Length: 135
Image 1 (tube, one colour):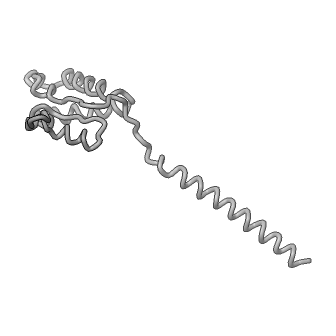
Image 2: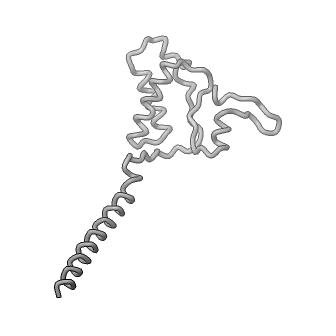
Image 3: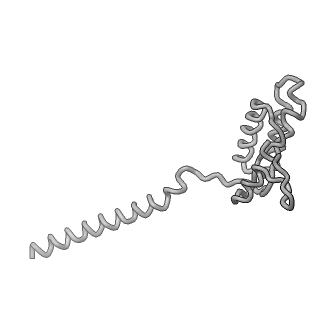
């Protein structure tokens, strides 16, 4: 029930989803009522798979719900109670998933370049020093 909340005079409904939005979340996936844990897990896994493919959040949620309804589940679990309570509020843009190495490319590249420069300088210095000493 993260989207249900207390009605405050002059404020409207104060909910957990509203709190996340106020804290700066661009989008919130929340529920309108207590949903079955198993069906929620199935939908969320599918939802994230669609997000990883680059789809918008609303498309990912809608397709995840369709996948759930088309899956091999008992007929009674196709009742809206099991799947319709999940809603998306906020920014619908696709997510950009970073690769694990994105944060390491620049430091590793810089380290490599500086290392090569150091080795080249050291080799040049030692070569020149050797020439100077032999003269």
